[in-house]
Image 1 (cartoon, helix red, strand yellow):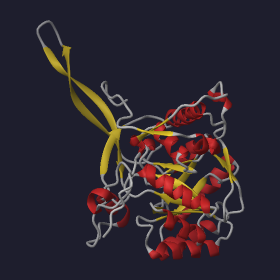
Image 2 (image 1 turned 60 degrees about the vertical axis):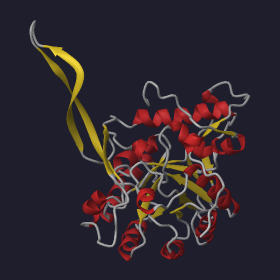
Image 3 (image 1 turned 90 degrees about the horizontal axis):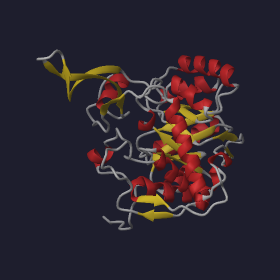
Image 4 (image 1 turned 135 degrees about the horizontal axis):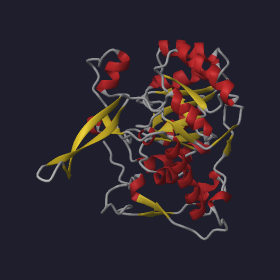
Length: 367
């Protein structure tokens, strides 16, 4: 047993230091980046925000909205091969290509069979290989197998939280490593297993390791506000994957329900009668992909050797997703002007952080 006693930080533990800049307006910054990869020979032009391949956020509807803003989407792995191919055909007609979409895969034989059917259609070349424990030997062998089958594919794989594993996965065929264990809003891995690492420190170490061998990282989980996305990009993340920030919208998956909530206000019915006011609010379900709910819904039940590592929550319905995406992009642009970064790729070299004890004043709530 050993203890690493270096300080480990989350996004809430730091703030960015503003710097004198020649950028006079947010309109002067460029949030589009041209990505070139270690293995995939095809460049990609995008703003590196990816909708998570969770069943409630990696939906066809969210994918359409993300592409309109030059953002990416990792489609969840519970669509059938036929559903994916049908969508990809229509999407290519609408957007001209499927360059901003990832097809997700686990590491089982059934996953590989479905992935083969989709990839052989020639409609998509981006693959997201997703397992809960990226330290399993099955992940490296599966990445190697997928790279051999589709040499020109863009392969993203994870999840891990240490530089050594990032290097191993990249050297075995992955272009982008998904980093983060336990930081998600509906993930309970840390609570159940005691395993994990604060996400800000994870991104710093993993980005440094991945870039050293020609790869990239995608920070997966832990962002609660646009400022966290900015911090992640400044810490070295090439891509940032979002789940909870994109959940609860019109285009998100999950059941919509209505709740009637008693407030402290009073309705006057007549001169002598009054009643407590009842407010109607809408909510949408959002759940972790290792939760008992997800296991029941997508896999026919929780296996006896497993335990739930996620939860099911109901979050207030947020309407269309477009305003959320525009606010996210606006936050990134504003951050870039504060730190003097004209290009998205320049954010890490323009960033200086303060360690802080508190980043927000929440006296009037968290909004």
